[in-house]
Length: 125
Image 1 (cartoon, one colour):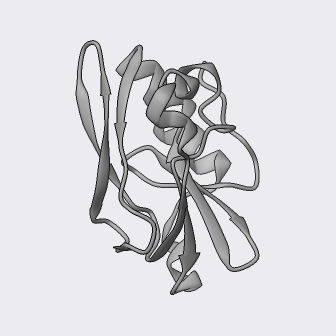
Image 2 (tube, one colour; image 1 turned 60 degrees about the horizontal axis):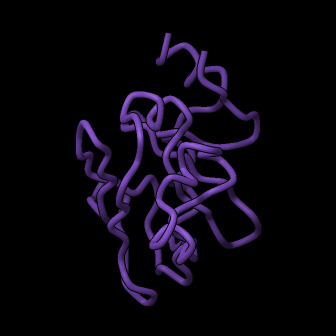
């Protein structure tokens, strides 16, 4: 069973957001990395780019599939996880510790449309 962490917000497309103040750390869930298999590449936006909730912001490629990344929140990308450029497999080791982008949230009310841990567990049964 895939790991689900309390206190995070989850999207139907298997991204999570961990909120700290006005920032959100966005990555893919443990369930998503299990479905993808060995991650070999992560396509990320640039710092300063704007992302919109529900819109594509990058992609994750594995040995068996490629999957678009859909942002669960809107805002400005203030940081990308550069460690993933050289070691994309870090997502397989711990998807929750290896976020993909850090976003300055432009509309925190968007979080209300995301799932909590219990709802995400139910959605991935």
